[in-house]
Length: 72
Figure 1 (cartoon, rainbow, N blue to C red):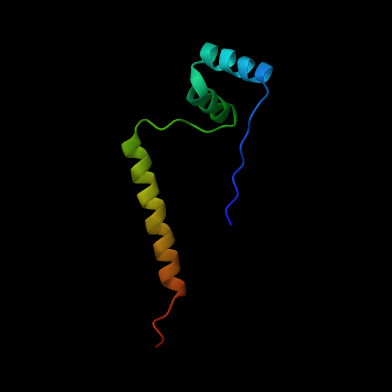
Figure 2 (cartoon, helix red, strand yellow):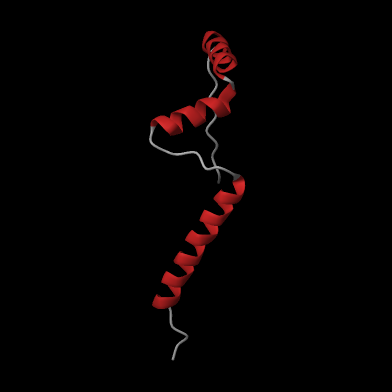
């Protein structure tokens, strides 16, 4: 059975989170800044993300092809 994690801060914490996110541009901006602080570089566009994912998928597929046999 699937379990869900729900974070529910108390009223004072919720107000602090609301003020924080209003000041710094919302949750997305907060996550973006945290990622940049951790060394992740923003990609120029969503198209670039798709290209990188496709390239990685091709590499993984090629790696698997080399390890699988057709029973010959």
